[in-house]
Image: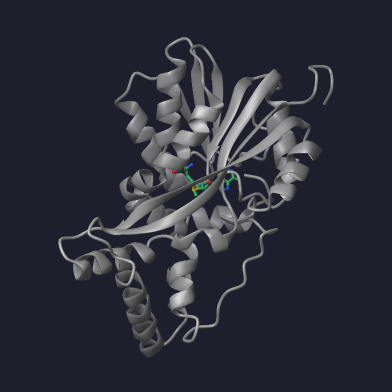
Length: 291
Ligand SMILES: C[S@@+](CC[C@H](N)C(=O)[O-])C[C@H]1O[C@@H](n2cnc3c(N)ncnc32)[C@H](O)[C@@H]1O
């Protein structure tokens, strides 16, 4: 592994990766709609070679492999040992043309002109030096190759992130989000995304907004829904980490406040929170003889 991205590599092999492994099915279900939009934009074709960047437990890699078929191939790359382990287990049962690599996707891992398509569902926002990472990744594309990925829009548009934080605004100091630093919102500023991809040698960069709610809480009663949703809040987003350092009393007050905020938006169908993403597409802007 490279010296870069050490914090993220440590997080995704530590508690963050552990939570993603434990709640993988739940997370796959909640992020499916966003991934499907990126998949449609990517339009993988039979026979193509595809790299799934930050593939996690491999759900999208399997989908890509189904699309490219036996004459194609898919490589999923991720820094998280537990998540790559799960991805390999999932792929083993299938006959799909798929392989997983435990590696930092920003390192020079693959020969130039290896792939027709670079794809990612929320796996490209974690590089210390995104322009350098995307330059390496672009070089692995064939001339005319393309990239398509999903990333989150700004925190304020993502209820799954801001709703619990707003609920505890008077109890715990709000964390500031540095949207230039590696993390879920590193690609939330469209101008920044365009700049990074252009600097990396991509052309025809396009960002299309896609928003959809996902269900946080289910249950027969609104109280049951709120209880279910409360558990989810501690699975993803900033709350787990933010409250870990607080006293038991503060944690209890904060937990109650979040529960009340969730109960307030319960409907007969459940508790839904908004997720706002960008579906980003671009093409390799360099010829084979240019670096
Ligand atoms: C939000 S998760 C998304 C996982 C997966 N794409 C999905 O949709 O389920 C982000 C993933 O990016 C991976 N990741 C972070 N930094 C990475 C890097 N430098 N190289 C490869 N993977 C990385 C993490 O380990 C994690 O699995």
